[in-house]
Image (cartoon, rainbow, N blue to C red):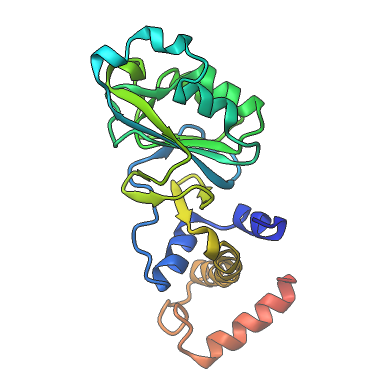
Length: 236
């Protein structure tokens, strides 16, 4: 991902990105039922680095497994590249935590761009205070070992019904998280930026009392003329 694309994605909404993806026939790129713990942070943008959980088998998933430095969860936390988004497939199961405050803090200190799970986080009140984007389904106090068994690092996963391939571009805002296929990231970012400029114009006119008919979409020629003039005056 080039820096221009990154900066563009920092300034557009997941809603606008979903529309741009929909135009290309991609309907299921929004990660369902995950929410930010801290809605005041800037957009989360980075390439996906993934961890996959499977249902835990009790004899293989005792507390002793964490003594192994190669344990997939611990290994993934230490290997997720700076600038990447750590995406966890917890099978949409928040009965046990995908991770907790210590591991999330470690990701933050390593320069990771954010973390997403379709399960839950323990220590969620503490995570919510960190200046670090974190998205989950709901708080979950039990250790992941009770339900989840970490099994694969940086493989294709499903997260909240969205397909996530390593290297896909992940964008999160106050509403949620969207997954952009890597090969489409540059064009989606450019299109979403243009859409945002136009929608800012439309929002301003609607708040002034203007009808959406002929304006959104701009089927009236006058709407297109007004937008061109507005854009010039705003330097956008």
